Length: 394
Image 1 (spheres, one colour):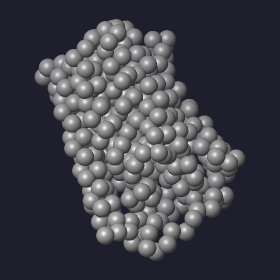
Image 2 (cartoon, helix red, strand yellow; image 1 turned 135 degrees about the vertical axis):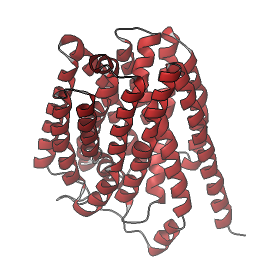
Image 3 (cartoon, rainbow, N blue to C red; image 1 turned 60 degrees about the vertical axis):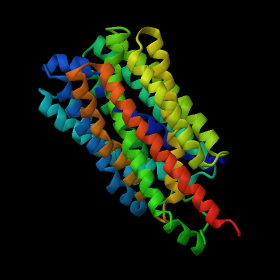
Image 4 (cartoon, rainbow, N blue to C red; image 1 turned 180 degrees about the vertical axis):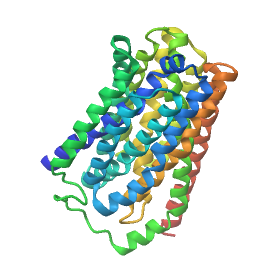
């Protein structure tokens, strides 16, 4: 990476980490909020789903805004709005007010992903590495969130965690408002090669594979929302009652490693061939996360998180490969609506299984959903092989 690319990477890495700290404060505090407000798991899971729908649905307008006004301006909207909504969440007098505040938080910080991913995919030549590093920053944020939230809850109160992330978001919003980013749509633009018309016509033929990738985002998003919402509770029940949520930090740090490994491998292996292999390995790791307890649960939860996030740079790379020219931001917006919006049904599904049975049953249900991503990934592989054969000279 040159100096401009490294500067861009540092800015969007900071932003991505902050977004995921804000995203995971609620799941990390789930047991304490349930106890404080006296709500059942299906209700708390429903609130997580509402947040996820909001988080995902704002990605579509964010994608259009990114293509129109640039990544930096969209990030300014995201972080200033997030600061306001996190403050309201900290002030919530009941679960209904909290649900509304978290919906607002999802809508605002959900603007980030199309902007950040578009900047990384279009502004840095080594795209696989850039997407991997971007993912690493997000996982570090996710890993820090439980430790920060639980630590503040123990020392002060669960509301203090929301006030903390509100201040963090305000600082990021101010930073994005005053700095100049070398990204598409901002004052400094990294040169992008012009794609020939034939290449653009070829991308139009990738519409069906793009739809299949979106389907993969929906399924993996359901697994993500269900697992990330109830993994702290799962570890509290089966590892340690007081600090089980803090063990999520250990697992999510492995997600950062997975992002880096997946991004690195994706630069050397065809993405359509890599996706089903990683998805297939993820299924038994998630199944073992469901049925084990104690230290082994922490180990296999970490393996699951590693593999799950190793596939993220692969799928985000496929979005860039299949998107029409000039519509990368919009394509990322749709993909994150699919993953974080539609996929957020995983929160209420997992919550229902927890209420009816237990967290083990919820994770077994998520394992079944994860199996669907193996099928989708296999379909992408077959379609890619057919295209390659059709393009080969006879």
